[in-house]
Length: 117
Image 1: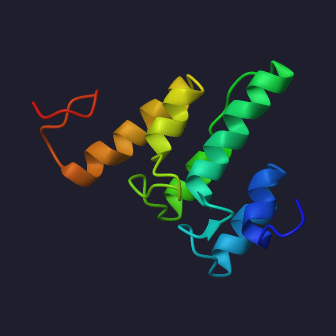
Image 2 (image 1 turned 90 degrees about the vertical axis):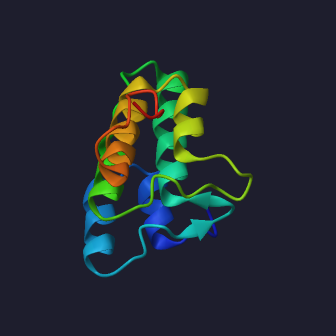
């Protein structure tokens, strides 16, 4: 974890209190580090943690970042969007959350699958 910025370190360690404190202090919710946006990093940590531990999926870090203005469309350096990362892990909770944020940004007329009505 050497080299992570403090806010990415908080995501990596699932330290939600530190994440919130850093965002409150002005950390950029769209910061890139090692090719990850904070949102793609959070979803990766949530999904990978579930695969490795078998613990239920959660959206704690994803929710915090979205609440602080993280862009749900902003891709990581490899081009993967947060939604694509969530789909990779079958992280349905994050997928639903992201689709709702995307629908709010688009306004009325967006279906759950991201298409137009």
